[in-house]
Image: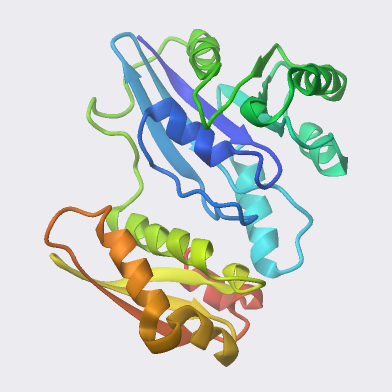
Length: 279
């Protein structure tokens, strides 16, 4: 048996969460076009007859503007230690920049480098990005992939599995993630809010489940200003209704989801508020 941990790192919006979901064949990490969608370490477990890989999805490493941003960076860099494989993810559709170089400087030599979003870039651009990646990081392997279509992901997984050390199975066969159910529901609510809100509101949203008595679930949505509260609720509650329907569609039948919006002024910059939210 082979077993171990593989951490996915990179700038925001390079597709780490989409890649993890593609590898596992199911959704275990929320996705969005909004930067810093992932705010915690999310573990996904790939189990095979002779191997088990625990993948760790991390927040995108960026230049922080708030205390929350600093905490997210700490969460991401903290996932680099004590793992068997580090996977640096780059975006095939964007030139390598200062952010990529900064992240590359954090990963150990001999890591794996992935150039993602090949479905959205011409072949010449992908080849150019692979060349840039080779100059950026001294990796052991380079994989062009499309997390959206799955192209190249199989070869990447084989490369990661081959690098796992001998070891016992770490999680049960049927366990795909260790994310608690309540946390997962709160993340689904936030994912839908990211899809329908605008401007700076997405970064000011936090969600947490405050009551869980199945099938009744109460989820609290936090915003930083009164003006944002109205945007999140929507005219006549239209936004909350749309979000609630989309989330319930992803839950077991019979789930009753209550959504409430609360103003927690400047929570992104207050240590106690961040700790209460688990950041």
